[in-house]
Image 1 (cartoon, one colour):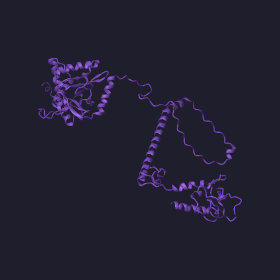
Image 2 (cartoon, helix red, strand yellow):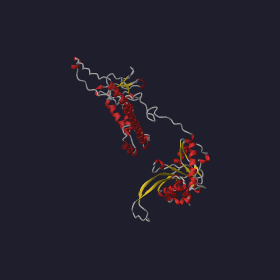
Image 3 (cartoon, one colour):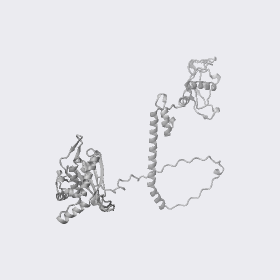
Image 4 (cartoon, helix red, strand yellow):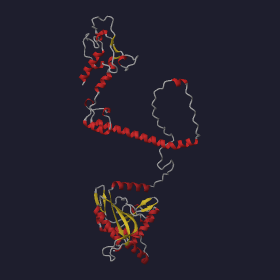
Length: 465
């Protein structure tokens, strides 16, 4: 391509320069009448040009041969007869300076794009000619295309963000502008002035295209709304040390322990009946939560593979030597879990009495560290708040927690051994959800544990053994 451009340049120069001026040597040592090879920089493209005016010394020989020292400068004189590209009065340009644009345009006439880059640019809508190539001889590579697409995406995102900000600012300023417009009196439009004689006889000018309207200025008082709404609409609540510790431990548990969830329900009609008999006949006040604690403790003693925890430091499963149940108690300082030691070995009456004492001391803030640190399993009961079901977060280093919902009256089909046939019977159902550390308790073990808990609550006589 460079040889074709050079040949085209020589032909164009010979056609534009008169015969008498062809003998003028641009480079020292050229003879008259000989078309020496001219560099591409001596051809002008901004106008179809003019003869070369050479300034020679007075002692130049008449034979047409000029010594190299006699040529002092060469300029291109504008010639407006070939077109209005250069207006009169344009200062003369040096030949080597005036012709550089043509050289750059000739070399960048067709940009080479690799097939992969062409496919990427075609799908993104980016013009391949606008991409700067970094390959050999300026070839646009795949990396160049990806960089251009990313830059175009960033520009589009910035433009969208700016447009959104302008829209928000305009919306925020609209009520103030409307209020001021409503308060200000509306002035009558001024009559149009009569046309002047000069304007009447003046020729109609070409219409000037209207300029793009400037974006409305953002109000100075507009600011980002506060987190709680308007400025000053929220109050920072002092945080106790125990609440900070609880928040840190729960966050570590939720993100550090893979939680496995399993749900089941238990028929607690028999439990409610036994609770009523204990109160009426033996004046023993036992809550439903006490039955749940005993049922969980007995289930853990039956399903021993669930009474474990995961030692993260050693990456090893550890079996617990006792069954210590942590009971979640809500206090003014946060949720705390006092521990009922050896719950599987205590009676319902003993469990009820000790749980009441632990709850009172927890709400009064009189628990000792050993009374709420540790434990092997936790229970959280929200049935008194009419919560049907929920999922609790494991209390590390424990491997499981049982979330207990409220008892609800439902209609159920009787069992096959019932004499009522297929007639629906009322029942009180309580839903429980087990959250287990999947590193220590797998799905099979979780199912066994839930089945044992449901069986203990459905037949509380198992808890008296």
